[in-house]
Image 1 (tube, each protein chain N blue to C red):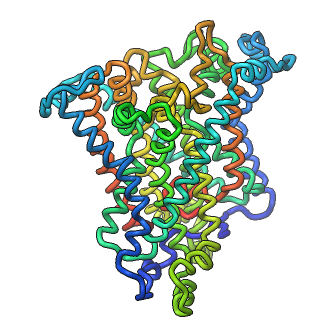
Image 2 (cartoon, rainbow over the protein chains, first blue to last red; image 1 turned 90 degrees about the vertical axis):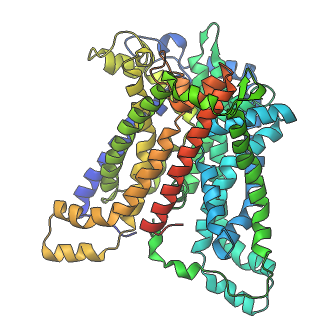
Image 3 (cartoon, chains in turn blue, green; image 1 turned 45 degrees about the vertical axis):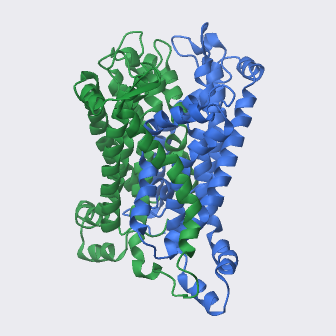
Length: 278
Length: 308
């Protein structure tokens, strides 16, 4: 930590800390309010002026459970797990190869990966929809898993490569001089050092898949319905079920909250595609 | 928070000297990834180009019509409307996110206690599902009972008992506000990581010379941070053009076409009007624009940040 600070002593530090805490409180207030809404009876929710005290109710939870929203939760979880696992298996060797070997057209291939990551999802959903309709992948688990590869595999290879480049090449050279095979070097030298990078990048992939909406909405929706897709379902003909939406919204938030605490400084590296090492 | 990429010279990461492996070995390692990405990215792109050159209404591809779809798109006022909206959206949201992010990063760089708790919390708006961000602001800005609608907007007579998202004049600015809420934390924490990685030497020299805070910022911090600012700004700029989920939930492009970004328009053309040919033409144009953006980002990041 190279603190470049003009503040001396603790008083200044406390003022700055207070500023940040106040800022966080204001910015995060909508999330807090949505969490309250999970327990708010409808009359309190729609009250003008805003009421702060109310008798908590579990009615929204009951409705959500009755409607079988846990299936959406299970679907989302399985989809994210399977697609992330595939990405790790397929992408790890590629990330390592891009970091360590010279290849023909390496720069072009690498740029192709970045372009895949940056392509707007809406451009992909059009061809996916019609190709999937033809080959029978529409509204299937396999179809969505495949579609998630576009943004997650490209992301994984790109970011894990930056973790690979951080590893000291000398260790591998020493192992090579000892006569270890390439596979042995990877398993015994590279992998243990790379494990944290793999976990961090994989957790980010999981979150991206967890948060994904457009593909899940357009290419899935009936048999394979993820949690984000289930939110618009709560806009019913009898009106919008706000309390239930809050329950589903906060549920969708919990894994993300867990992940940001696990990831800490790796988030910056991930979100800047490795340009900034957090 | 440790180093910016340029701390280590690139040469150290060169090819391994080990001579025994065969030349195809690295290609074998990348093959599964490259094949998968070809299937999920290159083939869909080629298929979109194919669709864009055919008459394809209501999902039925009929005859080859050359560039007719493109001509139709480029003479469509709605297309230019969407481009204009994207430019306003990005042109207002990104600079504000940039300035707020930089200011926030400078504050975070002071002696803050409990950073390891505050930083993940601050990241929440950026990391949560965009669809939930939309839901959150649908609730806060709901007509009449929405917390901010009632307590802020109505109190200052900014709007009546309707949602801002229903106002043709205000809806776009409300979406810009939501984007700023969602993405300022990203800018702030990326810039903060950059600040933490700056070398201390120049600051010690400045302290010896008795420079004040403003001088230090403009003569030391800003110049050293500029490459990072450019790269992050560029990345955010590219991403902001893609905005879809939040707009989809909050306004769906409305009222009318007041918030119809290219992404929303392409989606509507496909799944509402089933005008596949023209939608594909739009997708191809957007795609090509993003290839260009992406190339610029890559070159700039590589040269100025020495990243990648």
